[in-house]
Length: 253
Image (cartoon, rainbow, N blue to C red; front, side, top):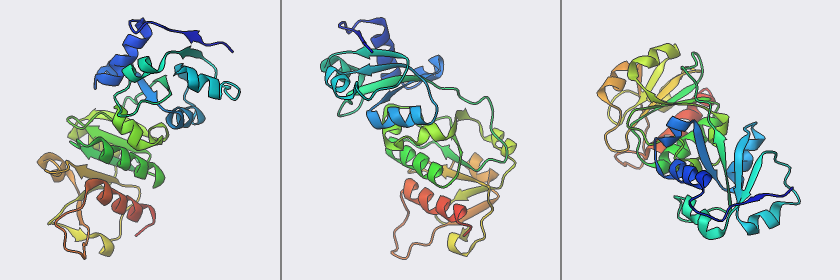
């Protein structure tokens, strides 16, 4: 297998990848996503995703070529050009472009997590990992939530994206189509998580790191849940709260 060598940063493919990497909403327009790093690229391929193109640095290609059995278009570029594609602090040695088939509608009856206005990519990626691990196969994001396919969310998600049904720009009134109990985390109101029989499947509503859930989503919740904090902290990080709540649902607590 001989890869295609690209030597100009103004190459059409590299220009498109830079836009995928840097412009938050560009992937929604093209239906494609730029995925960086061996771990994430492998996770996607192992879950049945087919890369449109795989981009390698020379050292990465030399190291992996004997074991590479991935079909498709392979491109090699210099390390400096690879760094120019990345929005991460440390650019990976390889990346790939995948086509994202975003669902047209919500999947009723599917255990779901709803993200309402979350801004921290690390929090969102962590929640995606927890959702996948705890059997919540669908994650919905309302307008104003950081892009689920952004580079930093992808890195924090550690491959969970490719095991989930993801839908962005969801309006609150669409949640009725889930046909599930809607549970909201709340700091000051509601029943204690450890004293509650949780329905499953269900949909957990998780709000902005500082402001919490919007009034519109909070009004849709059929049950408000509080997490008992024996140490007396005012509130938990949203990703930590999500992990506690989703684990409780998954284990029938």
